[in-house]
Amino acid sequence: MINAITHNLNVLGSVATSSLTAWRGCLVVRPVVQPEKPLVLYDMEACPYCRRVREALTALHLDVEIRPCPKGGHKFRSEAEALGGKQQFPLLSDENTGTVLYESEAIIEYLFQTYAKRPVPKYYRGKVHQPALGSLASAASALRGLRASPAKAVGQPLHLWSFEGSPYSRLVRERLCELEIPYTLHNLGKEHWTELGPAKQRIKPGPYTPIPGGKRDEFFQIHKRVQVPYLEDPNTGERLFESARILKYLNQQYGN
Image 1: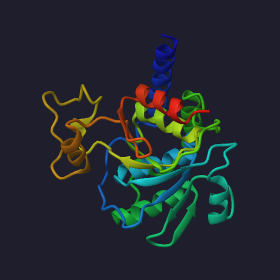
Image 2: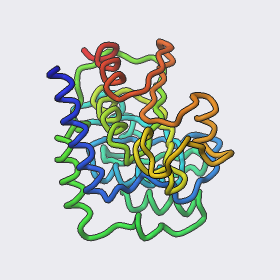
Image 3: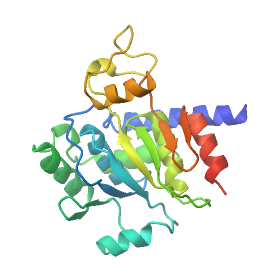
């Protein structure tokens, strides 16, 4: 009972985080073709600047390999420093163009220019008040996803279907970051305004039908629903919907 109450309180905090960030990272601005080689993001989930980059990735429907770098972490911080020269996050590596970039503003501009062939939309441009609101947004989630937790070794990276503005998905990403578990982030943003709302209570009434040929349609054809978070662990064969179930699994399988 206590765990259920705690989880629901964490969900409310995550909703506040999404609200303070104006629910960016929910709707797809322009779906782009996935690059031949995966993008790699050295990331700290609770960092407001990293969050802005993940919002842009959702807006472009771009998947990315996440290398979690929480404070006190040891698994990927030295790798990031060797790649870019310092332990600063976010850090994006794109082998398709040979690009290594720090600074959220520069990364966001690079993603839109390189993959969408367009300027950064106004909604995703930096604003004077964003650092303060971003810090409040992280505080609303109790700074989960900031510091490393003891964890067992992981073999292959996991796979998470998510989108940045999803409060439930954020809870899972926070724990993955704390446990320093690498994963492929499959962005599954909402492709049309009629998809807004929870998976079981969208704005548009009636049976849900995703846009044909899109990433959501591909997911729907396999699972007969579109709901995030969804986790696949190639190390154990486990496949899970629902944030509470995923968090329980991660803690039991990889917590230490």
